[in-house]
Image (tube, rainbow, N blue to C red; front, side, top):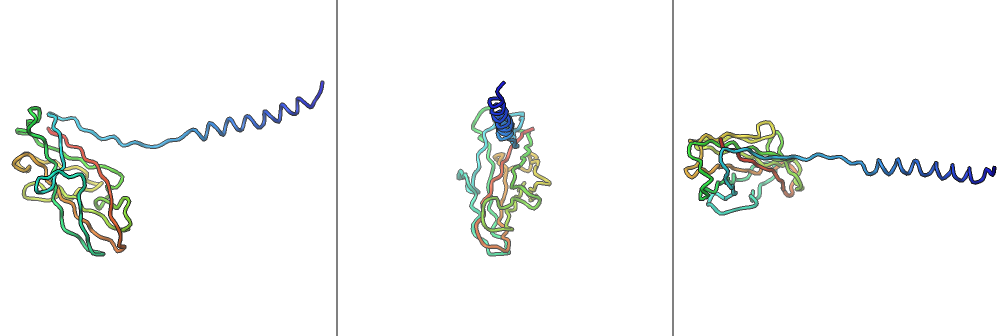
Length: 178
């Protein structure tokens, strides 16, 4: 028997097996996915509005000096009560905030350059203000604490750290009526 083809076959086998094993480990990836939602007694479309009632997709926190707080910016989560399925009579609402940028002291600077800056997020029930953090990410609005049109009022305020730069962050909310 000729040993040359056998050696060549073993060499090929020793190269092929590690390549197959490596290929399998390279393809294996993992990650996480955050899912949020709500199960409601009624279904209402919610829009984010400025304090004047204009629809907004971004809350502009303005400019703040280093190591100081900017102005509070009021915004609303407003249900579409023109929808006949959105009858909020005698219902309370729980709003839960989530996201990787929601920290123990508010909303952390996600992609901006102003290291150490954060935004304070507050639920603003009639007659009060309660901070929203990763430790307490939810607030329950009783019907009597909502605005007259069932609007849920919040505020955000930029609190600047010692490093000047930009602030940009994202959080998610879900509203559950009960």
